[in-house]
Figure 1 (cartoon, one colour):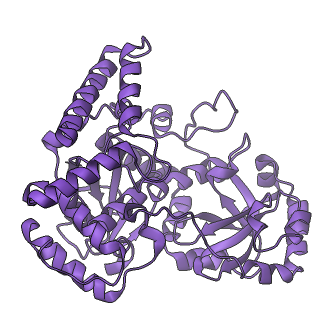
Figure 2 (spheres, rainbow, N blue to C red):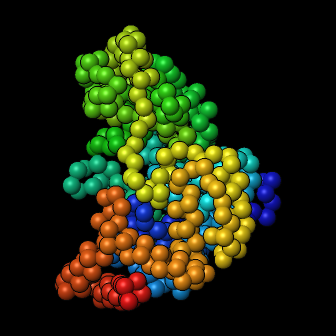
Figure 3 (cartoon, helix red, strand yellow):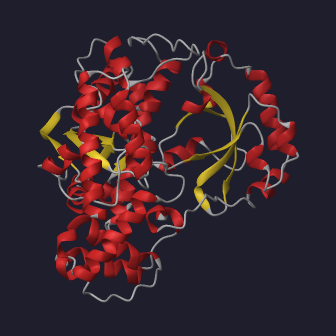
Length: 471
C-alpha cells in the first residue's frame, strides 16, 4: 500500500499466466512495485501466487516459458478470491496510476476477468479516487519513431526487418540488468528502468504520453466527426520504417463513445465509400481506437516533412485522402449504424462484456464478499442477472471447495470433469490434449533438463487431478 495515499504514485505490475486467454486461463504470478512520479521506489515490492482450482488445466507451453508449475503456485499461493482482493487493494489506493508493459491489452484483461469471477467491480479501480491506468509499450514505439535519440535500439527482427520492442531486447541493448526473464518481479523492474530511460532521454515525450491516460486528453487530439488527421503509433502498423501512420477519425460508435471508427490514410479510400455498416470492418484500413486505452496519438503538427520521409509516409497523398473522407458525409450515417459487437460464448466465465450487472445485484455482491465461505451458498439470493447463480457456485467451488456439502461436492466434481474434458469456446487445452502434449515433450530431445523437470511436474499434476476428479 502507499504509505501516503494522498500523494500521487505509480504502481508498476506484471503477470505471469498459465495461458493466453484472459477469460479462461489463470494468473500464475503477480508482481508489483509502487514508485513516485520520479520513478523512485516506495515500499517493498509485492509478489503473489495464485492457487489453481480443480476445474482448470494450464497450458504446458506457458509453464515451459515461465518455469512456474501448478505445484509451486499451490504451495506458495492464495486462492483467486484472496489474490484479486489484495491486487485490487493496491490498484484502488487513491491517486494511483497502474502501469506496465503491454498491460492494457494483456494483463489488465486477466485482472478484469478475475475481479468479475469473484464479484468485484472489474472497472472501478481504473477511474475512481483519481486512479487511472497507463502502458509504456506504445511510449517505447513512439520514442523509436519520433524521438529515438539517447536510446539504444535492439537489432531488427531477422524474419521481417521490423523493429523489436521485446522487454528483454530493450534492456539488453541499453545495458540494463535483467536476469530471469518471465519472472514477474524481474519484468516489473525492467519496465521501470525502461520508463526511467525514456523519461531521462526524452522527458517531453514521456510527459506528453503520461497525459494520454486521461481519455479527455485523447479526445482533444482525436476529434470527431472528421477531425484533423492524427498520427497514431500502434503495433498493427509495424513495418521496417516504424509503427506510425496518419489516420482520419470518422466518428464514435453509437453504442460505445469510447470507441472511434478510423481510417488508415495509407490505404485506398474507394472501398471505404462503398461500404455499409455490415461490411465496413472488412475494408482494408478501417479500424477502431479506444480512447480509454491510452492510444499514442499525436497532432498533425508533429509530422514534419522529414519525419514523414523517415516513416515512409506520403504526406500529401494522406492529406488528399483525408479531404475525400471529410467530404463524404454519408460515412457518418454508416459509422453511426455500427454496433460494437463481439463474439459471445455461452458460458458465464466468458461473459464479462455481455453487459453491466443491475444495481440490485451489485448490492448482493457486497453480501457475497462479506459472507464466510461456508455461508455464501446459504444466502439464497434472488439475482436479476442470469449469470450470477452459476458464478456464485463456481466462486465457492474454485476458492473453498472444502466447505461444500456432499451433494454440492458431487455437483462440483461433475462440473470439473466436464470442464477439463470439454472446455468452453475455442479453448483447446482439454485433458487429452494436456496429457498428449506433456508426453510428447517428455519424449522429445528438444527440451533441456530444466524443461523436463517442469514437464514431469505437469505429468504428476495431471495424474493427481484426474484421480481427484474421476476417482
